Image 1 (cartoon, one colour):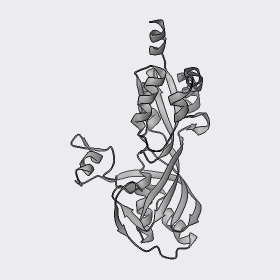
Image 2: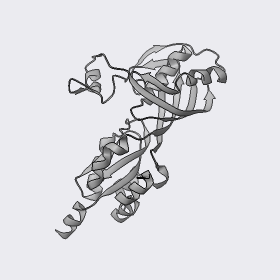
Image 3: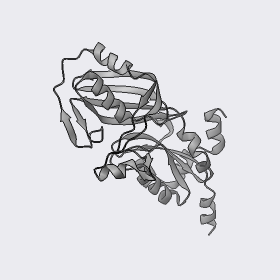
Image 4: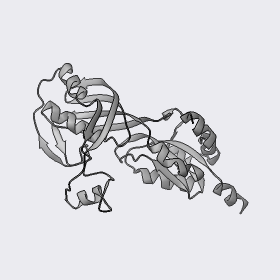
Length: 243
């Protein structure tokens, strides 16, 4: 009983490097089992295809979940030119294929530059935004498409790290509510050949990065003492955020 009582007082933030092929909810479920605690949430959903930083909040840290979700994010990704998909990423069905023209790096830079600073982004149908209480992705699975309101987003910085047609590797620092797969889709439209997101990794969220993250394997199989040691306490989180 004493062990159970100790577990119920577990409060803090655990940074997890999510592996591909699992949902963010899967990470939360494994955290609950590994730490023997029920009050667990996550900040900022990562699609099953995506890897990287998932902020897991435990105990009293769930009260600052919204604050942590509201911070800027940094991603590394790969765009594949020449095909648009139903989900705007590699996991969807191909809707249209077009030949990729001979593009210069300058032309690619120009397309990226069109999406800098403040601009409006149309949320994809495969998203958690709700329409009349129903998440859009559930409607999308039924083959339905509904009107969505464009959202104001912000790109603070981007960099093209590799361009070997038909692939573009990039890094982007963006505001909350930003859809990287829509970014990839829109850049493909700008270049006239269509595109989808072929890979995605979140490297930073607010002041948190992967340097203190545990792998999913460690989360699932590692000693509990190691997970406790990796957790950030609430005072540490406040200091990191500068509040």
